Length: 255
Image (cartoon, rainbow, N blue to C red; front, side):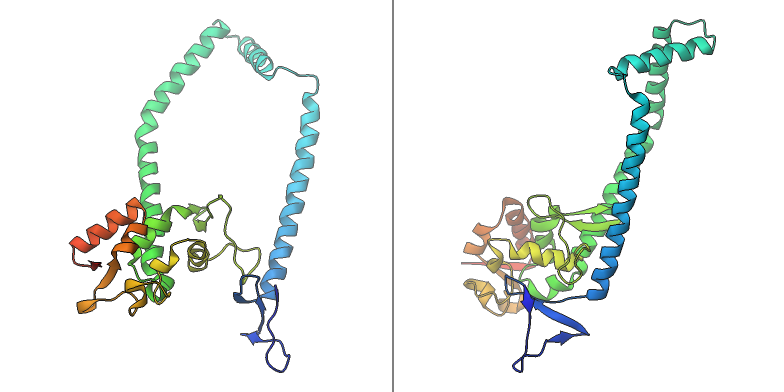
């Protein structure tokens, strides 16, 4: 990437940040302060990881000479039973432990299932809400937010309470304006759409034939329109959502 210069050869600055032009032609202001803070944070994390690794290596030396971990654990269990002066065979103790574990699992299974249900609902609300409130979708897409979510929703997930986006290879998407930081929802969505081979069919004024080139996909009565070619280019899930929206009168299918 390179600095963007004006006609006089001066560096172009936006909100006090120099603008860089990436290899794909996108112009992004560079936040130097945020980048320096991120580098300092990453250096601190690297030091912490190194110290934990050194501590782990030191603790592992205590177990040198033990090749069969399962046998060692079994021996320790027998010794523990003997130390506790239990008049039960070590194998019987294991049986009792298994029965207790099974009983506890059965007792708390409903709570586990409820927690999983609440987690799924939270995921749906956070991710679905991000699509419905997206400024990028409202301004640049020719299809409604639910269809955008049907196509790109699987790329987003919640990690530690934050929305994280990943590309088709499973790599997290990072911000261009704040290197080292995860991309915001709209920034990540824009990156995903840039890599989508049929993006001309879903963006407003993209130069595509049909509704994509007719005032942002609006037809008679102000309805969004989707051409047959655009419909055929969608995935089965997107086609089902589009057909449902058409049946409700939310958009119109045209030839």
